[in-house]
Amino acid sequence: MKVVMHTAALLLSSVLLQAGEVGAMNTFVANTPAVADEVNANFSEHTTQINDNNGRISVNSAAIAATGLLGWSTLAVPRTTSPLTGTFVGEFVKIGDMGSYVKQQDASVLEIQYNGRICVGVIADDQVVFELRVDDTPSSGGPARTMLQYGEEGCLPSHPATITGIFDGLSAGNHTVSMWVRAESSGMAVGSTNALYNPADSSADHLVIKEFGTP
Image (cartoon, rainbow, N blue to C red; front, side, top):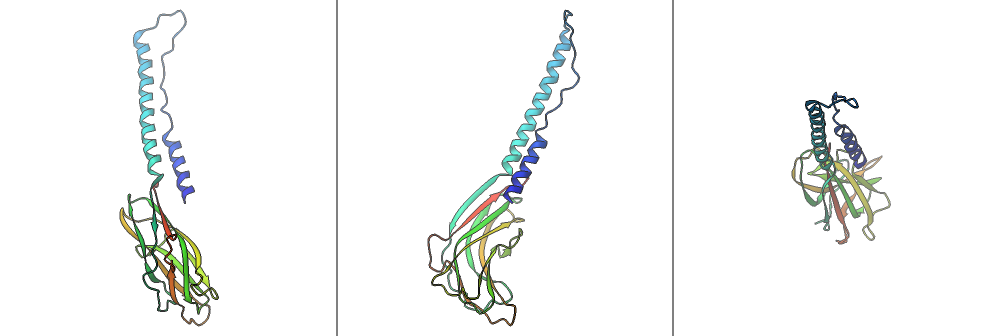
């Protein structure tokens, strides 16, 4: 996504940086007196196009600034307040809120990454999927997920996880990041339980939130 946005910014700048064309100029011949009005007209045409180019450059600079990194934040993620002890087969269930970020612009895009550890006390199904959401809504740029498979149960030790998601369509203002979980089974669902993030309450678990402007 960042590459796409940066490419779009370069394309935008290539359009806005087109120089204003100098119009027809008066031509002077050697050993022939120059007429003041014609000389002044040439200078006037150059001045007009120079000012036009200056305006284009100013607009382009503002456009480039709007498509870059607008803001970012690193948030410590505390341990899950309480394990998700009920079963969560078939549909995502919320584990807890992890932190919040104040978005600057309506049209901007958020890139959110969780770096930490996850665990499930009992995995009785094929796999358990963890998902990052914003305001309880999944990522619009594809699933922001990771998973633990059958046999990876238990929280001693827990499992390292990095989950990244792209979120757009969010208005300016405060938004809350949360973690959700779902158990999946190819046969009869049994029901996994006790899902946590940052089970050891480590200070290393964190969210990195970046806000990018769009052209």
